Image (cartoon, rainbow, N blue to C red; front, side, top):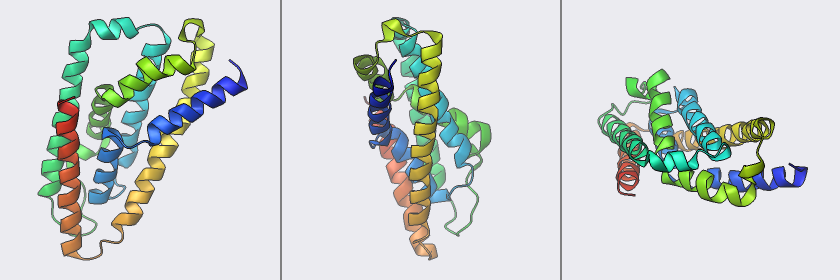
Length: 202
């Protein structure tokens, strides 16, 4: 792979990651409601999910993924259910600033929740199974080339999502009053519930 082809892939991948979709909406809504507490494992779930899809696309397992489409549908619904759960907890959470997020949004649960959201996200599937092969010749990918793509993807998605999280946290700082925080919680819950419904019906 040439530097030019890697740069093209990086640009296309960044555009896909930075484009609003279910994952970004869930991340921003979560940070608006609870701040940056526990956001690292939440982002890590997205990163690992993208790496899994990259490996699936790069190793010719796309046909296998189509064969087990039912399993990915189940994962999609699990991700939607997780978002609905977060929406409910967010809508009913106390509005005091500095309130800790619900247990489901921390640690391993946060990681698994965002991982299932990514694995069942149609936007991610379309990129890796349809758009990526237009930019990268997956038939000629060796393990070394695949490792290079993974090394390129990880900082792009992690950095982009971290930037969105920081921006959302700054916006959250504008909600100084308890009433404004309550509004932020309800709005974030609405966004997450909407994303869950959109994800489940695609």
